[in-house]
Length: 88
Image (tube, rainbow, N blue to C red; front, top):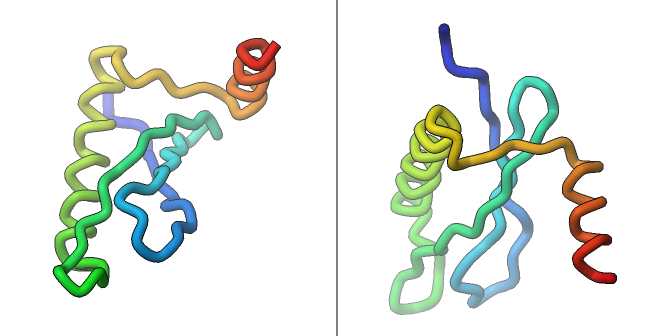
């Protein structure tokens, strides 16, 4: 059995932020979210090369965590319902 295809989207972030939300989406449209650190140089600019390495490593980790059931992908409406229930 092959791994399901998982793509990711990095959320917009403000200058100077140290982490960003990454949303992983599987072939069925289910999602898994996590925060990822943003590496920066001393002058505050993003170390793009290192950031790409982090994102690739995180993606590999998400694949592995999904295999063992730690990363649970859910449909967006399920996550919304959970968030609304928690807010009440």
